[in-house]
Image (cartoon, rainbow, N blue to C red; front, top):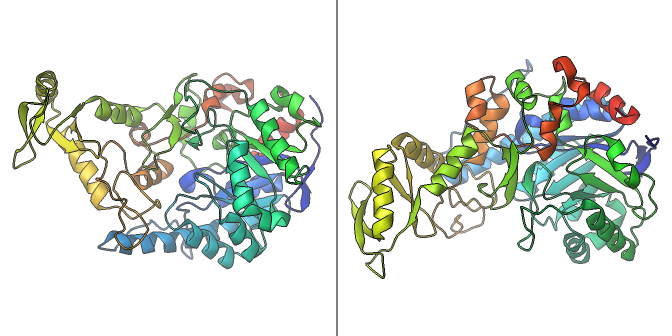
Length: 469
């Protein structure tokens, strides 16, 4: 394997190895600090981050507000407190080595307020902010305010060009790097455009080369590009390393740090990673953000698929083939189905799927009473964890604080399920909550490095990445 040399990133020389930020309470100050201590760039998640009391005991995030707006303010306060707590842990553990980055989703609720509060309360502890899941135009402005480097996450050269022309050109000196996140292979939310086929992955090399060519037109030939999604062994990327056509390249590891001793996920989750097979992680469109996302195909995803399959179109008035009357809800308000769909509904009801819930697309989905109660409870209990949520119809924008559409029961409360899965030790909870993952997770089972259920420390993982398999 080619030797891996340090590159200039964020104003210092670091190993071109970046820890990928992973949502709610998964990329923590402990994992980020350990990765930075190994000489790379560690990344803590500033999304609903955990915080602790004076005895270092985890404080459960319990919401007291009676309205969504009140709970949204609590969420922002929790996010700031948690981000500061994780930044302190990361900085202390790094021992002054590497870089500490904070990751956020631009479409998370109160994103600007949360990251600004974290950077204000953790001055000097965070060296860079990484941001994707949307078009974060104001990222450079926030970076300038706090004098930290920024790392936008994009999935195309076109996206970066738009960001540069609108905002980033005004803060070129603080652009630490550009993360190219492969929309077919990365875990979590994916940046597939409407013109890209989720079933037809594209080779990342031409796409990253196009990004480099765009960067060069803006005078950014030496700005690192961080390849994210599908990275496992660097031998598989040797033609990228020290390649003058691509310029400075770093590699982001999001999935592999899940299976380390520092990783906060449960032993049950770590064991599950060792059993995944190719295809067990797949792209889906269930996220309340409206983006594609990559998750483990467990009972949670299967139930969401079932909701969409138990779905029929309806009309408020008899029209065309929609002439079969059907009563919805306790008051049995009439809607009209086709005769064939009414037969399907009758069969679903005989199977226990007796609750009909309306969607924004003039369809009904049929679920069990227990599932209907969970859906309604989650919608009512919304705390505005996204800037806009199709599941609950929340929007953080005044005056209505609504996205203007009906709540969509085909989606789910992402905050509740990610909090649940990240803090559980229960196998059953893993099966029935969202488990984000990169598509390469199946390689844990066949990689000899993890033989005999070996779980490395972050330091051991980084050393093995540097020396090769």
